[in-house]
Image 1 (tube, rainbow, N blue to C red):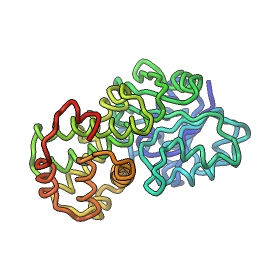
Image 2: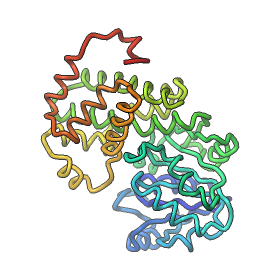
Image 3: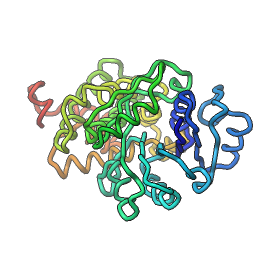
Length: 340
């Protein structure tokens, strides 16, 4: 049994806390709202994020970092990208020893174009309270994990022992965990698939069908691979769970908040209207900005990302963006998987 703090009490943080509790660990779930944590402790539910799900009684809810982090042996970070740096800064003063950190968030920081593990490492640089950083990613809707439906994910770290430690923490009969040494590839795949899910949602909102969705997913995967390998990722990673696997589940399911947000944009709603209706973070929007800027900086052709960026941030009509995508210059398919 390990004492584990899961910071972030949304649907994904709560579902991962359930996996850890099922495996017999002492789990402390840290949230921002006292009424939410009172509900968890008194009724063992989190209806705002996982309705009709009863959480294990061994999960305890906290709002204060100091109390939650006392004596923990590992931390799981499940907070939005925009909150990651502040969360790490608040967390590290209460760590009594250096502990491994596992993050299960997906995004790229727009201002710096940093991956999440880079953000965590930078915020801990002056304290050295984090012994290793591991990412957990893959095709895994929180709603289905909470129902204990069969799910597979991958964990990646620059430290092979840290990846194996994470695998041992989470793996059980319903939640299968693979290890992967490609930290860059796993983080990039998990982040950029949200862009493609948004684009697929837009096409659905425009009334386009499965042919269009398949085109966006396939060419989107080529874009993810081009950017990822340029940043140092291994090409095969994008054929795995954190690449193709996560792309499939996020682009085709009504559980996907990025797909739902894209559909509303395709139906004519503005980005502000979509975010208000969603009532939760849509990581793909920020990641679209970061990935577009990176593609320009690195001179990588990412036409789907560019088209979505023009819709989200330049006010281009989605129909016009689709026409421009279809009217681009002729390409050889296989060659264009690896270069513009």
